[in-house]
Image 1 (cartoon, rainbow, N blue to C red):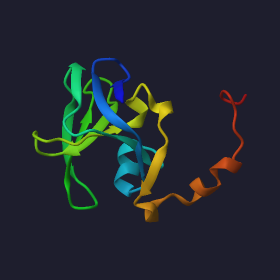
Image 2: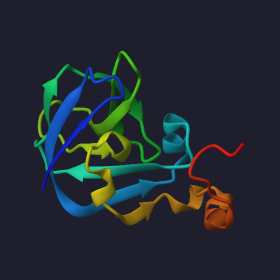
Image 3: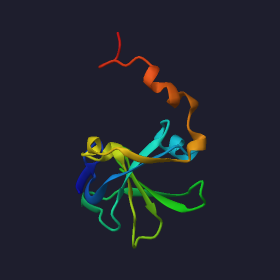
Image 4: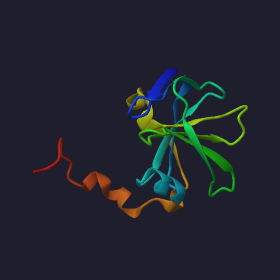
Length: 136
């Protein structure tokens, strides 16, 4: 499946190939901190299939909880996180951040990882009142 994506401000755009149902939800504390959220969801792109059609993302290389070095791609203008990939520039496998993918609603998670770090309140989130807009 061909997918497309971009950062919030539109300075970075990309296209990639991905298979359906290859979304991972990561609950590790690094993903929580780096996403400023309770978890991070990624769509795994086919190896070497990501092509940047506009702009070039900036990268920050971090050491993951697993010990692996991971390049974190983001927009240098608006700060949108776009992906994580291996540190080497060749044979890259991208985990594309689902919020930046245009077709994000067409995918569903296939697995959750680092579940020991899951925030406990996520188990009861379906019981929290939901509103179409900000409640008055």
